[in-house]
Length: 115
Length: 113
Image (tube, rainbow over all chains, first blue to last red; front, side, top):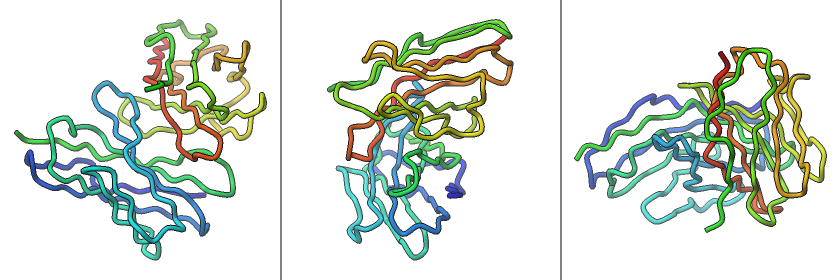
């Protein structure tokens, strides 16, 4: 079974600075998808960014980018120019491309943004 | 922008009662999911549903749980004989075929007393 690990329960960043959230995963599959979801205090899960395992190029969505290291099974999220609205819980998630369509989530990282 | 909606936002029920949680998917989305999140914990998969059938379910999804799409639009999760440990936030997610992206609703907070 696949597992997703987020080793940073909490992180803090100064507004306008850059922060990186870590995620590692364990799988024997070669083809899969990785996601970062944001959960603000409203508790709605919002898709931030996704990465296909077969793509070498790291995904980017505006201020959000990932560092995908397939061999190391690492998938970190970088938030540039942090804003107060970025304060939330961030979950890393794994999805197989071939065996089932469920998302397997990590335990999350709570990000605080200091004004 | 289309959104997944869920009702009710909060449901309080007594142990042993039945509850039905409702989800309206984004139009044209054909894959449906339920997840739950116990307060302070990670999000856990319950069940996936496609073409009026369960595709996959987790060990959490026992005989007390059922899903259906009764009228071609709503997607429901029914929990019979509720237990205290069923108290959680329940999220519906839907997916457009081929997109591999699941979009979540705002959740229903279920409190079993």
